[in-house]
Structures are given as structure tokens and as C-alpha cells.
Image (cartoon, rainbow, N blue to C red; front, top):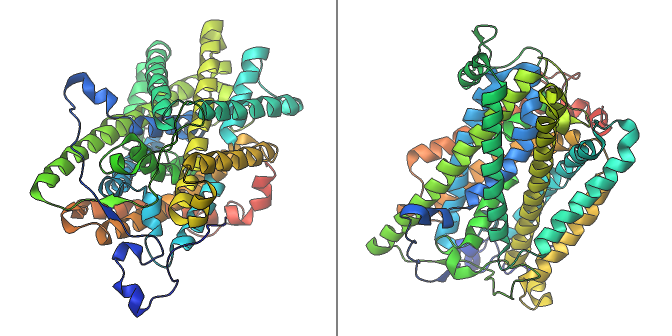
Length: 523
């Protein structure tokens, strides 16, 4: 990906060392401005203030919680909920650290990464490649196409339906583009509203279904599963024997959101106007949004006692947004489908075929057509909405990378960030229509999820470096958070290694590196 004309030399020198620390990798230095006061959060006003956590939660429900989680729990049991608990906790810490940087600078975390050595262009290319390999596969649209097919035909898809499924998947992909073009003033606000609606309906609907169609044994299995205890067998089962590491690595990464999507929460926070995000501008929609001046470099504030009080007010909002919305919602979003799937499908069944999104709906036919079609419709909504969030996050992040790093891009667009955003969107759509034909959607999702595990490992260490070197001392993360970031890196590195090698001892029969042709061929 061409990044354009960066604004500094590429090797350290005496003059380079004289530059402000934030511009030694090639970006312009920060400006200085006042930190806006945090808004009033009393009563119901808080619901108009929090929101980025809802977007992140909406993206997580459609991948790990709706597809990879059920595939894992049906095959291995709910004792693996301990992985979800650890992963969601670590991701919530990780999210808040990405946001910490944005509160202080008004820049997304990706720009913070570009402010570290060796050079901004290196990190721009690195994270653009990570985005491509994690979210460049439109697996959610493909899986959603299977659910739409089920709605209109009353049966699950088969190999002979590939052409129809592709056409439906392409249509849902283009529907996402339509929504992003006609998103009103702020794209972020449109996503936020759609996700609040989805979260309320999906979690509410799933909770009712769990009460109606699962028994006490299932509820106990779910609760004990968070501790790694397998209630049916009466023993702890942290890692199943003969585990499929391709599936478990994907499950660990997408328990919660995962990878580059976690990092993108800082982009949504910037556009929401948290902290110094109010100072730098936002990305408007093509239709319904006016041209907005989006600063290509951040603005910071002088740390004084008065501004530290404002900082703490913003930090409380971030904590509420991430812990009460994302953390709680991600756990509920994983456990409710897990209960329904394990209670209604036989244990050990393989459900990673083209009909993965409608397996539960088909299994619950015995409870009536209304329940079946409600679940199928829910699957359609969740997966299309997730594809929208994933696509928008990818386009937004690459836009911000180009906007922060390239003078040429800013000159070409006449300082109108919408031209960059929608040019990137067009490229993503063209590639997505090609990728839909490559291999079954669940394989695409597993591949992307395992890449997400690598990104979680690497970005945890990268944001630790950024927040402990570029931020002033009073705003840096405390010791326990630094330890949590290192723990996140170790946790995800463990699963990435197992995925690539097939076990602690490399196993050519199971390791992804040894079986790449098989996976990409859909085997």
C-alpha cells in the first residue's frame, strides 16, 4: 500500500534527535489545545455519551459469539468458556489502553503506532497488511447469505447452491456499502444507533430463548464453564484432548472482538468526540454529511491539576463504555448462543459447513416454525450488521493511516477526507466480491480470527510502548495495566503458536503451516 510522502528522514541523526519525540518516525509534531470538559453523565444522559463499546460489541457478536463460539462449544463443550472470560477481560484492558492514547492526542491508536521507530511508513504498511489478512475476507456476508437462503427456501444450503449463495452474499456486501454512503452527518453515530438496537434485540431475544428452551443443567454447565469445569463429565477440562487448534485459536481471538477491530475502537472514539477527539474533527458520510476538516496530526494538552480532573472525567466515561457495555455484553453474547446450541445439537457434532449460520434454526424446528424463522432472521441481522462494522472499521483505519501519513493523499483530495474514505471503500468492495468465491465463509472467518490472535499479541506490546513513552507520566498506565498488557501478549502468543504448529510439539497433521493448501481449499 503506497503511503506517500512522509515528513522526516528514515534514519536517526543529530537533527532527528532534536525533533520532538512524537515526530522522530516521520509524522508532523502534535499541536497544543485545551482539553474539553467531559459531558454530564447523570441519569439517562449517559446513553447519549457511551457508544464505541456498543459498536465493538456488535462486531464481536457476529463472529466469535454467533459462529466460532457455537462451533467450538458443540464440538468440545462449554468448559471452554474460561477462554472467553480471560480473552474478554484482556481485550477490555487492551481497548481502554488504545483509547487512552486517543484521549490525550485526538489521534487513533494506529497513528500512535506510526509515531514509533523504525518509521511511520513501516507501521502503516504493517497494520494495513494485518487488516487485509484479518478482515479482508467477507466471511460474514457469506455466512449471512446462507441464513438468507434458509429464510426464503426453508432449507439449509448445499454444495449445489453455491451460485445463489454467492449472489446473495454479494448483495449483502453491497447493502453495507449503501448504508455507509447514506449515513447522515457522522458514520460513527449511525453505526452506534444500529448496534444499540441490535444488542438490545439480540441479547434480549437470546435470553428469552434460553429461559424457554434450555434446562437447569445447561445453565449450571454455562456458569461452571467460566471456571473451566465440564459439568457433564464432572471434571475440569481446560484444553480438550485432540483439539483442533485452527478452531480453538480462532475462538480465542474472536472471544470478544479481536485484533485490528479492537484497535479500531480508538478511531470510533475519536469520531465520537472523546477527549481531544473533539478538537481534531471526524469522518463524515458522503451523502448527508458536510465537508469536515479532519486534522492529520493530533492535538495534546498541558497537564495541569484542572485538566487532570477533566481527564479523569473522560476516563470514567471510557471505563463505563468498555466494562459495562463491551465486557458484560461480550460475555452474555457468547454464553447465550452457547447454551442454545449445546442444548439443541448433539455433542461433538461438526457444524463448520456452509450452513453454520442456520444450524440452530434447523435444530429447533421441533419448537415450531416461528422459533425457527426468528432464529434464522436473527442470524441474518447479526451477520450482515457485523459485516458492516468490520468493513467500516477496516476502511476507517486505512483512511486514517493514509490521512495521517501522506501529504500526497491530503493534497490529492483537497483536504476532504471523504474522498479517501470512499476510495478505500471501493477497493475493499471489489476485493470482497472476489474473495467470496475463494473458500467457504467459516474457513475465511477462522483464518481472519487466527490473524487477529497475532495482532492482539503484537498490539498489546506496541500500545504498551506507545503509552509509556509518548504520554506524560501522570497519564501513563499504572503497573497492573502494564502487567495485563504483557499477559495479553503471552495469552495470544500461546494460541498463535498452537495454531501454527499444531501443538506444543509441532504436529504436521494439525499445524496450520503444514496444511495451508488444505484450509484454503476448504478442506
